[in-house]
Length: 452
Image (cartoon, rainbow, N blue to C red; front, side):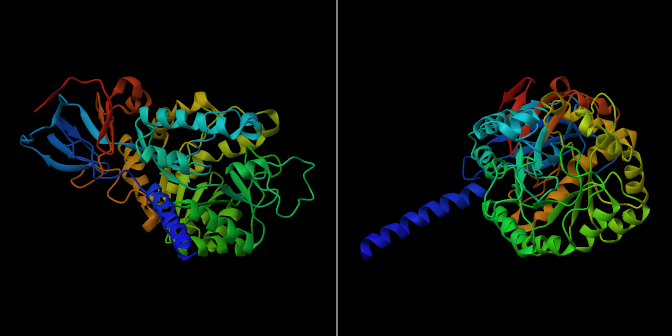
């Protein structure tokens, strides 16, 4: 009996070690490859202008050297940039990889295997558009992240939130109208899929938050206000109580990370800030008092350029007025964010619209309606990386990200042109991005290169 028990313990340790390995990034124990970019001008993720001509050496998954003089690197793959722009890989701070590539009815009714298969395609396309890192703001992406980190699939670095946590009747309640009264302990198909989970009361919120952290969430996402794509909650509804939100914040803080919440209105946002939430998703309907509160408390605003144009996500009539209400607030939200110096992140938040997902770079370029091209690119590189770093020790990819500097993680794009002068280049990655590198691996290269 003792020998049998020992075998079970050994097996359990092996399983546990496998799970722990799966939470992190790719191993650096493989041979260190070298890629040398010559004759490039660098946008480093922060500056308002390009450098002069530089040479940049990548060793393994890090930027090893940046020099104005030639770099001698044996056994290196050499890419002559011929004066093109080398910049950090782009970061989208609000995606839903399991939802962007499928229709809403499919997400609510289809086999979960189909959803995951389409997420694989979405991840590959994100990387092909130059988005080398994304923060997934809700959905079952733990397995996808692991497969990408292990090199089995192509896709961006993923900062996963796990299931979106919602109150009954909230933005994440996709149950049928006749599904009440709710059977205690019963989970809906959506909850079982890992897209969203219902939690009412501080104790339930604590459990659901801890479940996501257990699975490998780098941050936690709660739904604190009404939404466009949900059936039961008008935009003006405030969801959760401050006590419930504080329970989530405490659980996340105990793990060294943070909570972000979906919220549009001043009331919902202010309640979340009082509860200790560190980031607001959306916030299109903020007012001056709320903007001042965000700035004073150093809370991030993860804002999307939602306007009613050709890139608007088409909605059925039942949701259209809610959509327009949000869109009407976008200009003021950006104006207040700039006026009060709120830390602002860029995200796309594309849901149930695969054709719109392919316009990811176009949505980024659209930010010149409010910012200079340099500010736009800084927001989607070094700025977004600062937000991601708030996950602290839960950060699955520790190290400088979103910048071109020595020691930084080697996520790089070689652009055929100067995006600080022509931001439209990022809207056309198929032609403009001639090299895309993530974690030191070249995934796209239309340039001639040589080996030394």
